[in-house]
Image (cartoon, rainbow, N blue to C red):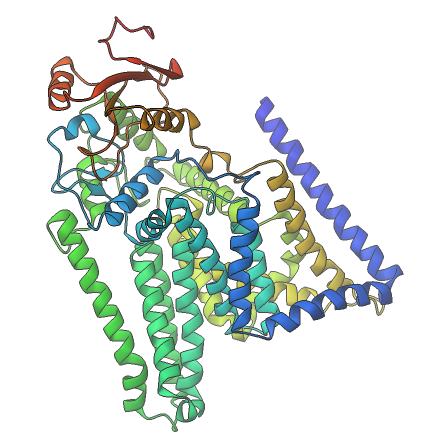
Length: 580
């Protein structure tokens, strides 16, 4: 066992011991002081329950609480610096949208600016679906793209609270949303980067929050008494949730939508309520939902047409065809290697990506274990060990049937994809936490010798998350998976320095032979020619000369991230610079 593995094993063992000791402490407290512990827990729960019962106010309070607390934590967790390839692609999209465009024209010097997850033909644009970009663009218009992250994360927490209110009593819904806020709004890359899952999680919450409300209208006499506006509002919210999913996590969102649609149709057909007027159901539910979905499809077609020239060709698909050779799904095989314009692309697409998966069972086990590690690190905490025996009861609850189906059908879909990041499962976030809260409710029924052991253990589950998040914030940890939110401040420092220097600047990035392909410096915004500072890749002498002639009005600089990532010097050809 190497040093890192030994350290990780020791940390894991220490965490397990901490969980066991916490569980033992609250158990002893419940057994020895049953009345005192019951009164203590009851007072806190009563206060929170009073807020929870105000179902309209509670989501608003949670929304502003997340905003306020996260802003107060800025001295410990400052505004994040982008570092992952995907983040810069999303920021390009945000900048494009903030300039009032869906895409940008290709640039004559595109080869020098070529970078990951960006299309250059027929337009210069991000390859990703636009929902996250719209959130970041809104933040940019307010002053900084991260404000869009902050607002979308807070909106996610409020949306999940609204969703949970349709599935369980109000106080339990508030608990579930509070757990979501603790897990994703402070020490999480969903808040501390530019590529998290808050937008997609909001879409999932809106869809699964509207569906049970519509089902109550469609399968009980309440549809006769309910106002048309209330039913139509939920149909529109369901459509909005589906639209957000289609434009954020289209694959995972489609799986969830199909499960929800199938469950809805099955429930309506099975109950066959005699009091329901089919015309009223069509007019109040299916018509507004259909209009929303048609508008979504029209927007997506128009968006694709503007970016790729084909309303049926997704920007992501275009990028895969242009650059990728590795399989996207476990049943696919790698294509032959391609030739690229720079060695960094060669290393990334022909080496790194192709080594990830070779359609063997051993590779499948490896990537599956990686998924399990990342998903559990992001979505769960060690305190959930205390509720594991009660999770089967949550899955079996009749009221949780749709959520259980969503879990067991959509999770295998996550494992069918070769690549894995925790926000891929974002549409299911509300499902995960609904089942967690339901398991906690079962746990609380445990009484030993007349002592409220289950109540005490349920508080231990919550307390362990509070301690976990509090410790992470104190240690300035932006996420348990450290690489997801650790951008290189050196690039940002150079950018800031030149932004305050007179004139326009062109920075040539020269990488070393041992360059880390995940540490990319060549990214630019939507307005290349107008930008004060541009970043370009050092290529052949001929291509470099074309670039210099095109930008002859700019001061040309050289950076060497693999030698000294803080040093900036006037450009000189290879062999003549200080770095050499």
